[in-house]
Each structure stands twice: as structure tokens, then as C-alpha cells.
Amino acid sequence: MSMFAKTFIDYAAGIVPWFLLGVLVAYLVERRFSPRGISALLGSLSPGRVLGALVLGMISPLSIISQLSVSGALVRLGANPVLLLGFFAAERSYDFQSFPIIAGFFGPRFAVLNAAAIYVSLVVALLAVARSPVSFRAGNGSDITDGFWFRQVRLFAVVVVGIAVAAAARTFIPEGAFSAAFRTDLGGLAVGTAVGFVSYFGTIIGNYPVAKAFADLGMSDIGVFTFLTVSPLFNVVIIALFASAARWRQVARFFAVYAATALLFSAGIGIFLL
Image 1 (cartoon, rainbow, N blue to C red):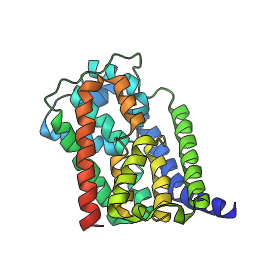
Image 2: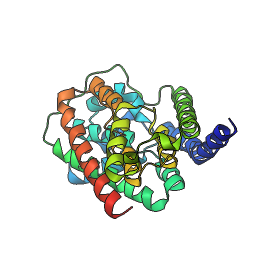
Image 3: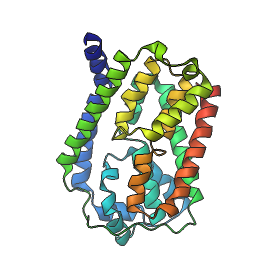
Image 4: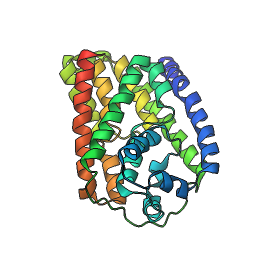
């Protein structure tokens, strides 16, 4: 238990301060931002708006993924459905606090490559559906700021659970329990993708202590990189969540293209750059 406590504290120290900073920034942003503001930023489909919408989603502290029910209201206020899909996906795949946490666990180089791979994969996926008719179901929600503190407490609870699960895995799973394939590039690529698809750790920050535990247990760099790059969107829970807000056939191509592109980038970066 002493090892569990130490591991829990170490992982929490790398995440919780940044999470709390993100809560503060999110509070300040949500006090001054409105659904009409988002709609104005996502109002027309153009190359600049595509690139900007994805950047905005990746650095957004709004935690808007938990507010997919307002998507119909945002479209009615003027948001382009394709851009809105990209914005939601970018918000899920990265977070305001992601870079310092990943850099703290795996180094700045790893963090830069991860952010770049996610961004380029999002761009390719969004371009693949740019001419597709995307429609969001009408919802009752109309204000993204509803229940701010409730959402933050819920997210923090998920983060704590993720840290606890990761610390338990690091403490109680013997390093020799994994086959040698777990430590190879191909094995790590397969395991990182498979675990990321079937496991859901809530907010994207919940993935980071789990990735750290995988690394501590001996997973190859390419496996850890794949887990952090592919799983944010190529996850059965996230796919179901998006399908609940939009017509699933219309967005299936987006997820498929993202997964394929992210896998290619993970393999290339893992082999040549990590």
C-alpha cells in the first residue's frame, strides 16, 4: 500500500495542479463566452475556419464534450455542422492542460509530437467529411454554462478515479505479467489501440495517468504514443456519445479517417522520431 500511495501522489502531482488551473481558466472563459460567440467563430466552412476551429477545440477549457446536447442549439444559432463536429472532436482529443501534463510525464518532445499528430489527424478527418451533410439532432440545451461547478466536480472525480486505477495497475500488476510483445513496437501499437478502444477513463486527462502506468510497466514508446493519440476519439464510448448527438452514418467516416491517420502517424513517429 505504501507503493500505491507513493505512485498515486506522484501521478496526482503531475495532473491535479494543471487540472485546477484549467478549472480557473474555464470559469473565467465561460463567464464571458456565450453560445452565440461559438456560433460566430464556427459560422462558415473555409480553410482558415477549419484550421482555427480545430486549434480552438484543442485549447478550449470549456469541456464542451459533456454538453453535446446543445449542438442543435449551436447550429440554429449559425454554427456550421461540419465545423462543429470538428470542434467537438478536437475538444475531446486534447485539452487545455494536456501539454504540460504529457510533457511532465514523457518529456516536451513527446508532448509536441503528440499534439502535432492529433492536430494533423483531425485536419485530415475533417477534410474527409467537409462535403458531407452533417446534421445534429435537436436538443433541449441552450446554454453551455449550465451547471459549471457540477461539471468540474464530476470531471475531478473522474480524474481521481483514473489516477487511482493507474496507481493500482502500476502497483499490483507484476511487470513480468505482460508478454514480450507488449514491449515491441508492433505489440505496443496493437495493445495501445485495443486498450484505448474498449477502455473509457472519462475526461481525456484520465488517460494520462493510465499511459504513465503503461510506460512504467514497460510498454514500448510507440504503444504509449498510440494510446495517447488514437484512443481519445477511437473509443467505443466516445463514438456512441457522438452518435447520440449526430447521425452516426454521417460521422462514421470522420472517426474512421481519424483512426487510420492517427495510427499511421503513431507508427511513423514511434519508429523514426521517438
